[in-house]
Image 1 (cartoon, helix red, strand yellow):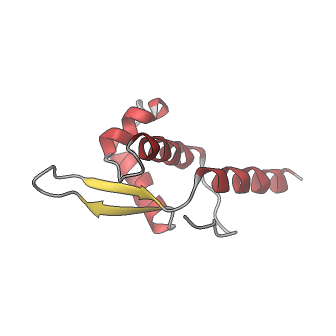
Image 2 (cartoon, rainbow, N blue to C red):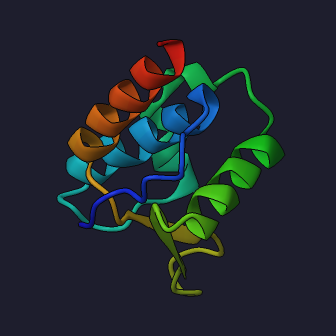
Length: 103
Protein backbone atom coordinates (compact mmCIF):
# COMPACT_ATOMS: atom_id res chain seq x y z
CA UNK A 1 0.00 0.00 0.00
CA UNK A 2 1.22 3.49 -0.75
CA UNK A 3 0.66 6.98 0.61
CA UNK A 4 -1.82 9.53 -0.77
CA UNK A 5 -0.78 12.34 -3.10
CA UNK A 6 -1.19 15.74 -1.44
CA UNK A 7 -3.47 17.15 -4.17
CA UNK A 8 -6.43 14.73 -3.90
CA UNK A 9 -9.46 15.08 -1.63
CA UNK A 10 -12.03 12.29 -1.73
CA UNK A 11 -15.68 13.33 -1.84
CA UNK A 12 -17.91 11.59 0.71
CA UNK A 13 -19.47 9.28 -1.90
CA UNK A 14 -16.08 8.08 -3.15
CA UNK A 15 -14.89 7.63 0.43
CA UNK A 16 -18.00 5.45 0.98
CA UNK A 17 -16.96 3.28 -1.98
CA UNK A 18 -13.42 3.02 -0.60
CA UNK A 19 -14.83 2.01 2.80
CA UNK A 20 -16.80 -0.78 1.10
CA UNK A 21 -13.74 -1.94 -0.83
CA UNK A 22 -11.54 -1.98 2.29
CA UNK A 23 -14.10 -3.87 4.36
CA UNK A 24 -14.77 -6.43 1.62
CA UNK A 25 -11.02 -6.81 1.04
CA UNK A 26 -10.45 -7.59 4.72
CA UNK A 27 -13.40 -10.03 4.85
CA UNK A 28 -12.11 -11.72 1.69
CA UNK A 29 -8.72 -12.49 3.26
CA UNK A 30 -7.05 -9.58 1.47
CA UNK A 31 -7.94 -10.96 -1.94
CA UNK A 32 -9.41 -8.84 -4.76
CA UNK A 33 -13.16 -8.23 -4.37
CA UNK A 34 -16.15 -8.04 -6.71
CA UNK A 35 -18.70 -5.25 -7.04
CA UNK A 36 -21.26 -7.43 -5.28
CA UNK A 37 -18.93 -7.92 -2.30
CA UNK A 38 -18.28 -4.17 -2.10
CA UNK A 39 -22.02 -3.39 -2.12
CA UNK A 40 -22.66 -6.00 0.59
CA UNK A 41 -20.12 -4.26 2.84
CA UNK A 42 -21.30 -0.71 2.17
CA UNK A 43 -25.00 -0.30 3.00
CA UNK A 44 -24.73 3.47 2.43
CA UNK A 45 -24.35 2.68 -1.28
CA UNK A 46 -27.64 0.74 -1.46
CA UNK A 47 -29.64 3.75 -2.66
CA UNK A 48 -27.12 4.60 -5.40
CA UNK A 49 -27.41 3.52 -9.02
CA UNK A 50 -24.91 0.81 -10.02
CA UNK A 51 -23.64 2.94 -12.92
CA UNK A 52 -22.88 5.75 -10.46
CA UNK A 53 -20.94 3.39 -8.20
CA UNK A 54 -18.95 2.07 -11.18
CA UNK A 55 -18.17 5.69 -12.13
CA UNK A 56 -16.82 6.30 -8.61
CA UNK A 57 -14.70 3.14 -8.93
CA UNK A 58 -13.29 4.32 -12.26
CA UNK A 59 -12.42 7.71 -10.75
CA UNK A 60 -10.70 6.04 -7.81
CA UNK A 61 -8.75 3.85 -10.23
CA UNK A 62 -7.66 6.91 -12.21
CA UNK A 63 -6.38 8.50 -9.00
CA UNK A 64 -4.41 5.40 -8.12
CA UNK A 65 -6.44 4.36 -5.07
CA UNK A 66 -7.57 0.98 -6.43
CA UNK A 67 -6.55 -1.50 -9.12
CA UNK A 68 -9.08 -3.16 -11.43
CA UNK A 69 -8.53 -6.63 -12.90
CA UNK A 70 -10.80 -8.65 -15.16
CA UNK A 71 -12.36 -11.62 -13.40
CA UNK A 72 -11.60 -15.09 -14.73
CA UNK A 73 -14.32 -15.81 -17.34
CA UNK A 74 -14.86 -19.28 -15.86
CA UNK A 75 -15.79 -17.70 -12.51
CA UNK A 76 -17.67 -14.58 -13.62
CA UNK A 77 -17.78 -11.65 -16.03
CA UNK A 78 -17.13 -8.78 -13.66
CA UNK A 79 -14.09 -6.94 -12.37
CA UNK A 80 -12.01 -7.51 -9.28
CA UNK A 81 -10.88 -4.57 -7.15
CA UNK A 82 -7.79 -4.28 -4.97
CA UNK A 83 -7.15 -1.24 -2.76
CA UNK A 84 -3.71 0.31 -3.31
CA UNK A 85 -4.01 2.72 -0.37
CA UNK A 86 -4.81 1.81 3.22
CA UNK A 87 -7.82 3.26 5.08
CA UNK A 88 -5.81 4.80 7.89
CA UNK A 89 -3.68 6.82 5.46
CA UNK A 90 -6.69 8.28 3.65
CA UNK A 91 -8.67 9.00 6.83
CA UNK A 92 -5.76 10.85 8.46
CA UNK A 93 -5.03 12.77 5.27
CA UNK A 94 -8.72 13.48 4.65
CA UNK A 95 -9.23 14.89 8.15
CA UNK A 96 -6.05 17.00 7.97
CA UNK A 97 -7.00 18.45 4.57
CA UNK A 98 -10.59 19.17 5.64
CA UNK A 99 -9.32 20.96 8.74
CA UNK A 100 -7.03 23.17 6.61
CA UNK A 101 -9.92 24.18 4.36
CA UNK A 102 -11.97 25.36 7.34
CA UNK A 103 -9.21 27.61 8.70
